[in-house]
Amino acid sequence: MKILSAEQLSEADKVTINKQNITSEELMERAATLVFNEINNRLQGAPIPIKIFCGIGNNGGDGLVVARHLIQHGYHVTVYVVNYTDKRSDDFLANYEKLKNITNDWPKLIKDKGGFPEINIGDFVIDAIFGIGLNRPIEGWVADLVKMINESQAFTLSVDMPSGLFADKTPGRNTAIIEANYTLSFQSPKLVFFLPETMDYVGDLQVLDIGLDREFIGKAESGIYLIEKQEAISMYKPRTNNSHKGDYGNVLIAGGSYGKIGSVLLTATAALRTGSGLCTINIPKCGYDIVQTGLPEAMVITDNENEALSSFPGNFNPDVVCFGMGAGTSSKTMEFFNDFLNTFKKPVLIDADGINLLSKNKELLRLIPENSVLTPHPGELKGLIGEWKDDFHKIKLVKDFSKKYKVIVLIKGAHTFTVEGDNLYINNSGNPGMATAGSGDVLSGIITSLMGQNYESVNAAVLGVYLHGLSGDIAASEIGYESVLAGDIAKNTGKAIRSLFNREVKELRNN
Ligand SMILES: NC(=O)C1=CN([C@@H]2O[C@H](COP(=O)(O)OP(=O)(O)OC[C@H]3O[C@@H](n4cnc5c(N)ncnc54)[C@H](O)[C@@H]3O)[C@@H](O)[C@H]2O)[C@@H](O)CC1
Ligand SMILES: [K+]
Image 1: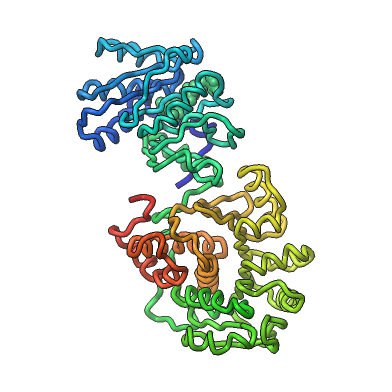
Image 2 (image 1 turned 90 degrees about the horizontal axis):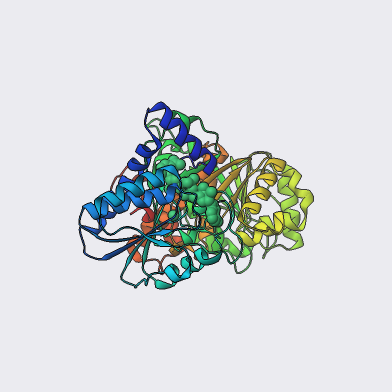
């Protein structure tokens, strides 16, 4: 799904009104009625107190429409107008009149702290104060109101966006933002919903298709995509009957050092489980027995050194090489890396200590083959691009890096971003159970395997990240978040691929 900016959404709004020959009030009615339907489906007429806080722009207008429908369906509703200015939008005013016509309980105006109502933990709060029109942080008594709503711990549903969040930039420190339990967002999720600094404000997210003009959305240049099952299916390449193991890639997994041999086992297992035809593991001598016993399906090349890799096996020409997990950063391994980058010229995957070695010796960056994939965790990423001020700055630095070295870079997190030049692919599978040792090693194996199976590097990365998350979702739904081991993620890769075509299995997040 494409992610649009606030500006593009407002434009889509105008184009839709024009092309569908409707008024903006009719579009508001359509959008807010969908919000009402969702709430009604969930509450099923329950007589709980509903408190709706409406701003005076169009987000507030949505709130008034929702209020009207809830009242007409017999719910116990109190409406508050958060009157931070007297400049009300036309559609707000139209719906204000409509609301007054159906109830004697007219909206209560809040003009300062004196007008704050009591909010109890059992109330159902609807936040329609600000949406995509917010252009500066919330201040003064409105900020106090937001704080009070958050402190009440009442279930809070935000319309379009949690009030106080900007769609396309980071909020300042200590600004007032609604901490929503649930967000019903119109047409397109907003980028900030997926960033580490702001994702927690959103709660569970649902995007409502309000029927904005498809042609406009199709053509809008966004460069930001949310990756879910549908996108994953479109990238997947099915196997043909008339094929053999040579068609599915010969991958070399190089890494491991004394005490960290397990990492390459996890990577290689994931590569084979994702469908690699052949997998060879290059490790220091000390790992020989461990790897041969742990994964009989893989072949092994040992280094001359016992405890760390020191020279790249040049007489061997795999389709793709994955380097770095558990490798350490000794000077011997730096020699291996140097040797490897000077010898191997097809796209590679560099992870973990491979990234640390790059940070130690930035000259090597120029040797990375075009379209290679780098998979740093946040600490390793800092070594590559330096400190960032906020999430948007981080994205900019990674885009610049990706363009400069013509590589694909992951920004790993609860929603991993794959960055290729100016394009951002945001992953929506996965769960907190995957924050476990070795999870990244498995991811590298999955992506490397897909690269070896002739997927374009960017598709290998985007689909690989998605499948990794889905495998984790399958593992967590079977054994619970706490018990997920990296090996469970590797083991479930096959089920994840099958589940792409099985309607019963969903991302945990979308359940
Ligand atoms: N596709 C769309 O764009 C649609 C938008 N709709 C709703 O319209 C919303 C956008 O409405 P508006 O553009 O009226 O904006 P908002 O309702 O988000 O904000 C209201 C106005 O407050 C002012 N303002 C901004 N920051 C402020 C601050 N910190 N303190 C005081 N005043 C501030 C601005 O002038 C802004 O226009 C969306 O979020 C959505 O809820 C829906 O009605 C339907 C369709
Ligand atoms: K809102």
